[in-house]
Length: 253
Image (tube, rainbow, N blue to C red; front, side, top):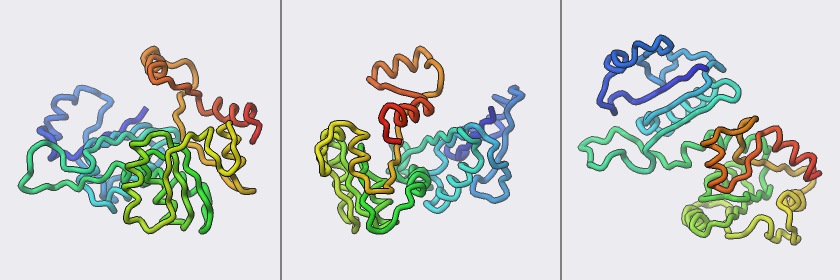
């Protein structure tokens, strides 16, 4: 496995030479001082299994973050992981800085590239109607409505999350609505009790369903992860089993 770690060095109380002095005995580690925004940073596409970005992106402009995110995705292998640790919405630390070099972004800003990738698969056209089941505090809805001129309805069970989504909708000049509703009991327009039955009943001929959900890797989970699944009340499947469940058990695909 090849892992790539990035950090803004001035934000930490150690330098690259000190890091190398402390950890240079590991023969499988290479230390490099480089500008992640520079085109001269040469990392081969599809060559990294895990990228860890540590408090790096908050020092970049919006455009720089978008460019770096696109590059990171290209560096990753198929099935690779991108882990981002950031201070969002406000500057890091508890004390005021005389000169703040950071550009904190809202959490939803960091998911924009993922949103763009998922939404691009839907082939949305102006006038389409979209239902987001389990919309949370929103973000994807505004992107779809503003960039594709579609009408979006988002709903979920959390009153707090829907309240935040409604507050975020203030000032947006697009067709986005939010409501608190149970996805298996929502009337839209016919009363149905099965979740996937609702999806396919609502869809126009030729409509699409995009599902993003928690999954697990194939095989039995570790004892720690199994305890977490049980504590959260989740029922997780691997991607292949998930697809077979939808195709065979639900009978819609």
